[in-house]
Image (cartoon, rainbow, N blue to C red; front, side):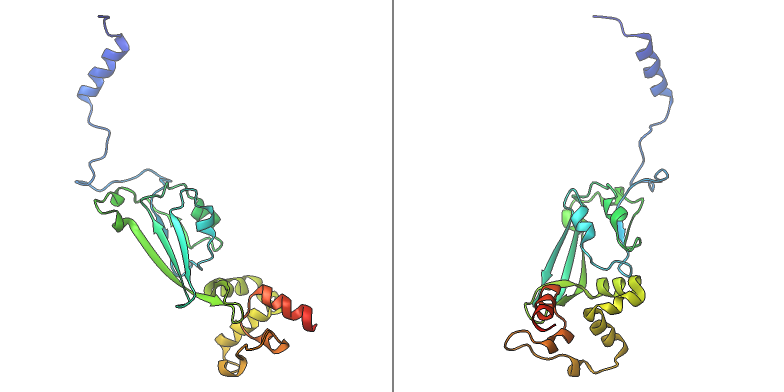
Length: 202
């Protein structure tokens, strides 16, 4: 048997006289270091439900399901799969929708369902083909971002009319029965259906 090295003896003596380096959580609250990447916190007021975070999440901890019957988009965040990479914060289009907190030890639970969070957003659905366009908050965010340039889109005009109530909603919405017509441009329709109308009548 070889004798231990001097360096190893030194480390053993130091470890005997120094306190433990590990945290005392949960007996004491964990105080993380600066720029510590913990649980992503979602600000519902600044999140527009644009799917960007789900598209860039490498661990697929964020999933999105659209329900056309209820007109809701359900965003599910499973922090049990999250690797705290910060991609959701980096690519958030509003810059405030999601931010990394310093909480991570609080995610240590026995029931994995407790680390799953759900969020709902209202969908904008095409009146003709029933395709999902996006969320209403996403369109309003783009409208505010573009300013006067947003008025070039008829879809934005229709949604702006709902906000300002210049014309009653019942007067602008017409049921699409036998194919798209020019009047249907003033309905809530997706870009593909809008293109079909423009090619056919303009």
